[in-house]
Image (cartoon, rainbow, N blue to C red; front, side):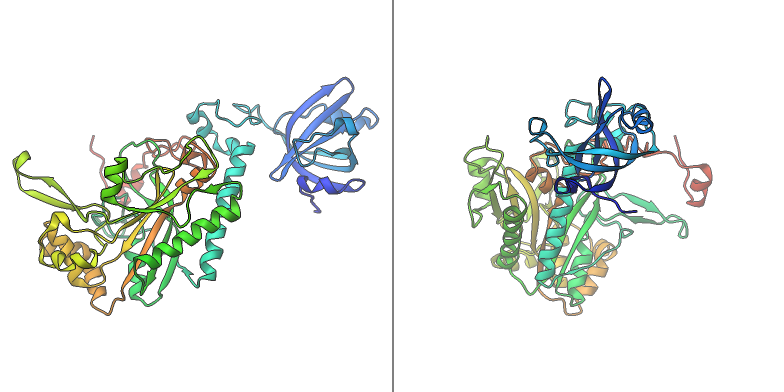
Length: 469
């Protein structure tokens, strides 16, 4: 099969081609039938005349979203019929052969609009149709190009892309885990990773030095606007680095992405401005400030770094009738800033300890966060002791990390970006659901596949699970 992409016919006037795609629209003008045929690359006009009776009669049956194969001659359009709004607007197809490959029911909503006028849940139920619209297809292409750019950039920097397990161990890292029951080990469960945090650090212990992954992550969170139960991160870790090394690499990558893939956009300030967490809260009342000088300009983007976060935050205390309990503000694997290392090890001055955490913010949204990590057993254990973990619980939850760090772990640090959020912002979309092929609703339902759904009794029995109502 010799197939020509529709967009390529713009340069093929006078030639005969085979094109395949969907009927985008149909217009009858007396004896003339005009069809717009669409594939992923674009749209072109086909003109059926009564001169070829057999093909004309077949064309009269065509309806929206039918799948067809067309052999035809590419003709230049008359000067007064040129459509300057599409790449193929100077040519049209004169049909020679027409084949109907599949018919379509009438779609539940129009596909020739941007879709924003249609209820989101309706669009998500028929997502495979919604993705046919031009705006959504462009978002999928933009997402692919951004991820490919990241891969190529990091490959040039001698990073290795390494996959880490999806079935892992439940550990207290912040949000609730999604858990998976084990059929072979009754009463035991795997957890889906909230991030590859522990694995990427173990890869540094393994001596691989520069790791990245386009990673799937899972968090069982309560209903929250623009969140998804599963999402995609750029996950990255480096050995023998300090904070400035990681920040410099990420800033270079972000600037390169914008200048290469979004040349119409202007970065307000390079190098990115940076401020401490305390300064951000004092000046902007948020740790993800929007620094754009003109917030009405869709092509103006303002990155910034926020640094020097408090390591711990207090819960409870005398005001609530109990003792102060400390929890980490970002993750327990971060290292304290060097000047607070002794305080952490000795468990003192806890409220003033600053962590090596750094967040990168774009137009008021946090798009990434990371830190230099604890790479000694003593340092990691000290964090959990501040949080009130017993020795037994520390070993039960994190003994594997403590043991790994006892075998010559290098200093290391890294970052994770929210790919969904970054693509959303760069493409001027309002929600991450617009840049994910098959998203869940805000309350974690898949309307297209109708999940979550009950299991068959036989499956529950195999998993040693009983449902109590």
